[in-house]
Amino acid sequence: MIRSIVKSTNTLLKSNVAINSNKRFFATETGDDLLTFSLLSPHQTIYKDKKAQLVTLPGAKGIFGVAKNHVPRIAELKPGVIQINHENGDLEKFFISGGFAFVNPDASCYINTIEAVPVDQLDPNEVKNGLTRFTQLYNDAQDENSKAIALIGLETHQQMAFACGVSA
Amino acid sequence: MNSASKLFVALASPANQRNMATLKDLKIRLGTVKTISKLTKTLHMVASSKLRSAEKKAEESGPFSVGPQKILGAVTSSDAFNTTTEAPVEERSGKQLLIAITTDTGMCGPVNHQIIKTIKALLKDDGKQEILVSTTGLKGVAPIVADYPNQFLISGRDFGKADYSFPEVLLFLNEIISKVPNYDSALVVYNKFKNALSYNVDRQFIPGFNLLELNRDKFYEYMTSEDRAATMKDLSEFHLASSFWTGLYQNRASEMAARMVAMDNASKNGESISQALGLQYNRARQAMITSELIEIVSGASAIESSD
Image (cartoon, rainbow over all chains, first blue to last red; front, side, top):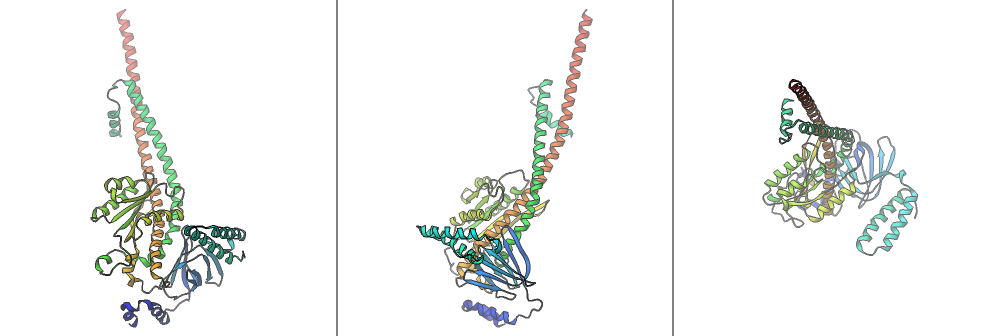
């Protein structure tokens, strides 16, 4: 009731986070405390409607975790590590190149990435090479455009280096 | 069979009424039909082997568009533009991008025809010329350009010849979007694959940024980053890319299924025609031999009787 009144007032648009946290508080659904998530890349369906305790995502504005009854959210992802705490307690890590994550009100989460590889498949030597190459490119870049491109490569490789424990 | 043999009698050059020429024509024709049958049979086999992998890919790539569709699927038409007095957040282009997926090569039954028919119906209803068409594949270009030259944007040839790649898809879409960056909405038209024997035209509506903003009450419950507008704009484009991506694979599977059926029919037809032609050829050959024999015999008897 309160929620519907609030919803109809446009002025409170900005405070929708607070509204949803109410909803979260009043959630009465019982059953398992698991999140249903799908990890998808264009060429491959890595997980479809899989249960997990917690999924940690590299959001563009900071890392955040998604569990069941998370606030519905549309988030852009930047290159980084996705960490999945599986139903049985196993931990799995993927490196993704960015994309979108959708957390729906029905406790389902879709993670659409462009590329996703298990972290242990990253080659530390290649990452190191890439890091030096893009640092070079970034330093040599003349105009805005090539600088931006080099920066994307550099940030991606920094994240990869962080993920597989390589120091530059 | 009877009508087939009549058909080919009529086709044989009427100037050459002499047996030899007709016989030769028939032989050439028979050869041609047999070669074509062989080709169609090969195409049938190629298509049926490709169908299996295409089907698998269609299934694999299908879920990729589910996430954005689940959220943006709430907006299914651009009616909000007509009912609101609110000023658009960014300048309106008043254009709808129609991206049709067609194939490069033909011989795949009604796959492309169905798409073109759907687009033309849409264009016909579109009095204000709001729709801009772009296609992948060559087969969609000519029919659209012929009738609506001003509403054709770009086409991508040799698109995904070996396999589609996502970066390539993004480049293609970028080309379109850079021409109309503030599209009102987009529509992806493709053949949705059901099974090897059936597929039908499907369209996926993608609301543009302005439309999303007008329908923002539908997304209230979703939290975004502080820069909501930027996220929504990116989301609209991402939805376009993911829908287009799944559409491509659906269409590829439909194409292969249609080609398989079409080529199977063609080789069956070819077989029955070559059978009919073979019969006709043998008959003509026998008739020729008989008439030659009669000529020889009657000639001999004429000589005999003149002695």
